[in-house]
Length: 270
Image 1: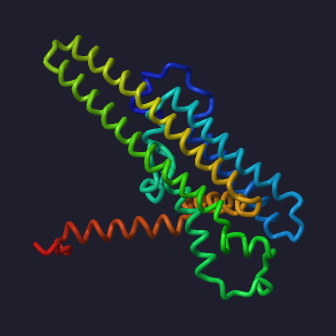
Image 2: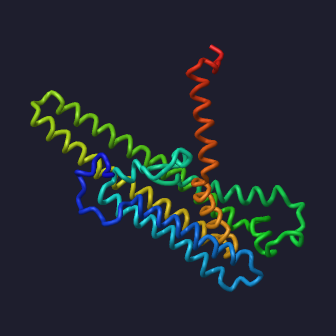
Image 3: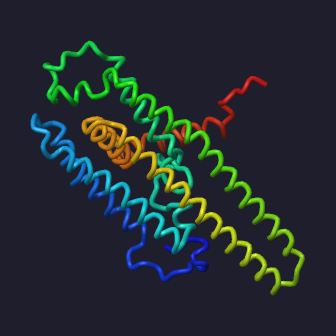
């Protein structure tokens, strides 16, 4: 289904809608690349691990390249992705995963490993290097994570500010044309929408550059096991969004909350 502003597309639509592309990309991630990486992480011989880590990394990077290309055709389909379910939506920022998610995920691995040091590595069905990958990480890695987080604290608010400015300019232009005759009104609104979509395309591509950069910087700062585990965790996070039982439970909880609110069951203490 075309996006709400698809009439503004500057290029001919690709033969494969991005929703279908994403499904193919996701299936390759879930059914091919993730099992291969997991196999290498479970093997006592790490010979294929760097190669399979890089395969998964390139898969993510190629996805963001494709996201940019699809946005250049119709940015609205990326800003309002119809292929995302209700469980994914809270994690989205300008069409895809929030950049904070990557560093938060990394922090969660480190915290979990260092808060649970009582397990004996020999009792687990995984190589020693995998089990100890996040235990007492080197100071250099922690410093790099902090630098990445510092960059995010600067860049994310900047992107949000740009979105607000674009929206404010759009509203102002539409308001200025609203009292015109019908012909001028339609032309003015069309021009305003086109200008907004062009600006939003630039902002979205900036967000994608940031996402790519954070993923690359994390993998480069980590050793081969840490980088592989980070990418595996990120892939598993995406796969988890498609868990039908989890999505169903989320929807049930959401419906119960709405029923509680509409039925007057929530007391705010006023």
